[in-house]
Length: 182
Ligand code: IMP
Ligand code: MG
Image (cartoon, rainbow, N blue to C red; front, side, top):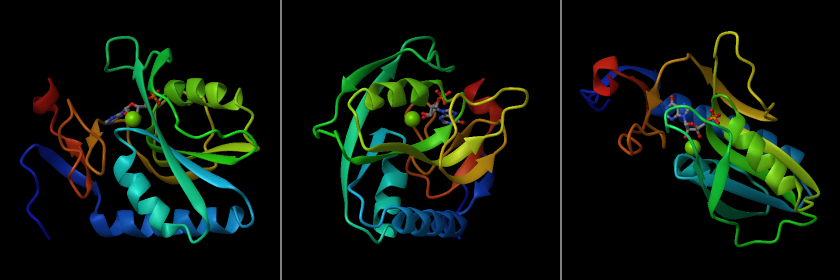
């Protein structure tokens, strides 16, 4: 076991646990998309690590593409109003689109994206998210078809998730020490 990063309070999901979760999700997706025209779309940058693992866990033909969005507002909280910074290279009309996300918090960013992608007339449009943050008294704006696991309402980093663009390369998901961001 590698040493814990000094800014991490505790590990929520180890590298081994993450690998098991992603394998399970990949099997579910492969089963559901047999004979379909699957396109995985990851939202840069947080979902890149999960995308890399998930695509290799799906034993079915697929294509991948990426989008980058920037959200208006203060940065810490999602406003749900997003601007597309990098659009898809692919035409998704008539294809089976699965959005690959790192974490679902309010879901406002994803709700906007789904509306935008739906207007391009894919055959189907679903979401696979590695994490769903359990936020007390607040309902996420969307309901993902595939969920890796749930996490508490703390600021989590690692496995693609950042704080100020750091920690994305940690192989586990951990809770950041509050003194790091306060
Ligand atoms: P939403 O629109 O509130 O669902 O925002 C989701 C986005 O906020 C995710 O794609 C992440 O980029 C970011 N995010 C939300 N919670 C966390 C967290 O705990 N750590 C790191 N990024 C987060
Ligand atoms: Mg993100």
